[in-house]
Image 1 (tube, rainbow, N blue to C red):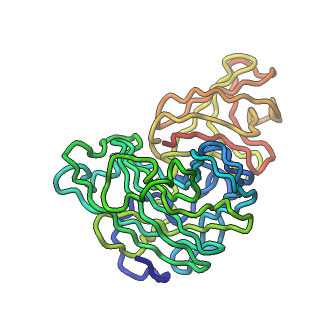
Image 2: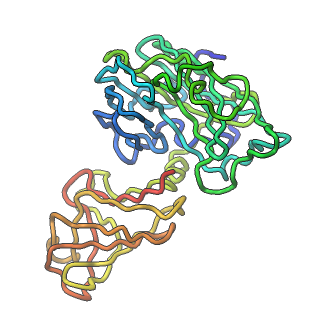
Length: 365
């Protein structure tokens, strides 16, 4: 079912949307990244992963764009095709995915008696008419179901209801913090995924050929653009109005998976608390996370310095941040410099005079 965009005027039912950052309002990593298509990863809007496989020749720019439907969101996720791929290898994939923890899905009751239907709704537009697919993929039990939808050049809300998966009682979602369900927006695929008959009626054990049969290719023309926002996944057969969420709540949910200190354009901003130099080249410091992270995160950095709060930075280039985070509530990092620290003196880690200087802690699925 499709309908023209509507204004979110209904009374809210807080927490019904199982999707995080469905309004595309949070983009901690970057607002725009070009030349994508050869690698899988999280690049712009938080919690939205670009899945790629088999080295497609197609390339795109992915961005958080201020072009959302009025009354739903000011922002959307935009893909802009910059290089075509008209010779599609069998195993190629391009999709946008949100990967969801099992413990956030228990309300569905999947795989057992009493399992509930799932309704996915979203606002989409494109540069032309395309046929694409939405898939629910059960990563715990290797089961899936897909449905097609068509784009136009105007914002349209699509509402897709997926059958309950009662199965034989053997395929519930695991009740843990690991990946259990992928919400996939298929935009391009080779024969491995398109040569069968789309599996629309019920969850079934995965047959790759039936996952994206009938879709268009986003990489067919450099004029192609795709816009997505207002994504909602809820229990039951009815799509309710898109749940409007406070930006602070959305950010906190995103920070469970990625916390980035800095990167906001503040020159020389402190990124971690004062620590003690244990040698002339290393200082240990801590950074408390605003929320408990999903898992022990990996740490990375860009253009950071070590300073003592009185003198100029000890080292303005080549600071190496050790991956020494050992819990989900606070980061423990070791900064290594070439020389110049005084053993047992206090130092802290700060950004340089660079808008993207940051420490990043990643616990994505």
